[in-house]
Amino acid sequence: MTSSMLFNATTIAYFASMVLFVVFIAGRSKAVALIATLAAWAGFAANTGAIALRWIESKNMGYGHAPLSNLYESVVFFAWSILLIYLLFDLKYKQRSVGAFVLPFAFLGMTWAQLRLNDAIEPLVPALQSNWLTYHVITCFIGYAAFAMACGVSIMYLVKVGKEEKLPENSPAGGILGMFPSAKILDDLNYKAIMVGFPMLTLGIITGAAWANYAWGTYWSWDPKETWSLIVWFIYAAFLHARFTRGWVGRKAAYLSIFGFAATLFCYLGVNLVLSGLHSYGG
Image (tube, rainbow, N blue to C red; front, side, top):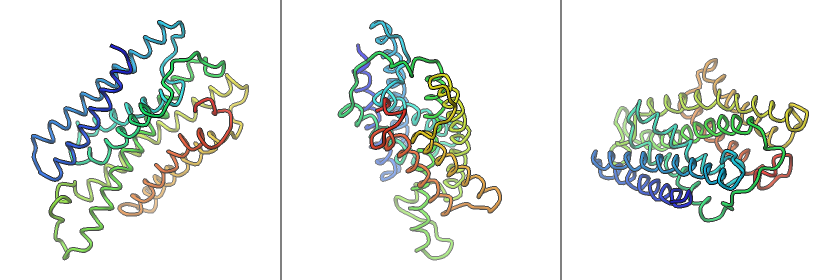
């Protein structure tokens, strides 16, 4: 058994779960929803085992660093983080249809990593040889995963209210949209996911600054990654500020959540793949 085999199993499980959640929405079968959830848990277990096994493989090769040091490892960890956040929300709210809009982020990430990214285990460059790497990456990606969850439920919200607005007043949406949570629950899930992600992103920026001071002798150097991290932080800070002071809920909040996740993806991938800077080794 190798970590690559477990990552392949993870991808298959996430795909099966995603498809089954769609089937559940279309067919309204609670048994299918249960199987989809079990597939998500199975994928999460395989993803966890694969990351642990890759760490052991790194130690056996004489490196021993946590598997969070390159783009491949960060993408599979991002997928793991998305499932962690989704499953925790599912345990509390049991809104199974949400899985059809969140699992695709994890599945696409795993597919991209498996098919296109370099999965070689390599020694760390000097700038990455610090425990701050682990703290920084874990906090950032749990924040990113919460934003992915918020984006997924925001898309559901916009689809649902868009349909309901065309119906006679006080008429609930039927058909597939009838399986979606109510607009109020979706809006609440969006807010609570961001309430999880925002402090984690804040911790990620703080630990990143501490790591930068350790590695480069300065807390902040306006590197493109740092600048975009700050932009993402301001977007979600504006989301929370607008909600608390202006009562922004519903459609405005959903659009801002989707915009925030798009900025998050650019911060994570766009900066690494398009721009150059101190974080270029992350690609």
